[in-house]
Length: 168
Image (cartoon, rainbow, N blue to C red; front, side, top):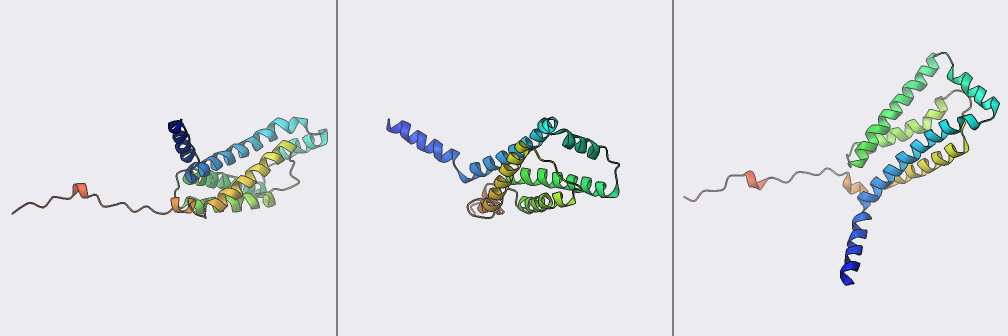
């Protein structure tokens, strides 16, 4: 009985480490962002006729200079998203800066979008969940003990490769 309890305690400690929790939050944020996009495309047809008509007209716009800026900002945001999340998963130090740039791009993107933004209920739910998770990730990556995971690890000198002193 005592061995089983000890095994459960060890297992719980292993799975609830700060690294594992942080990585779980990263994965949950990616899933909630993907769920938001999927919800938008699945519920687009359930919108009232006027809103569907507006979305169709908006998607058939001629590419203008302003629209090209939105596309470039979206591409930059996607690049920062991918690089920062992969870097954060592997605790790469510069990924924290990339994540902050991603957050700034994510906040300013709706300002660059032209016209009203159509959001379905489920999309709003998943957007809110991802915003909360991104805020928690932002907070955790600059506080201890996760902050310590991003510190540079200096390699220890390899003493096995040094020549052994010979006896005279």
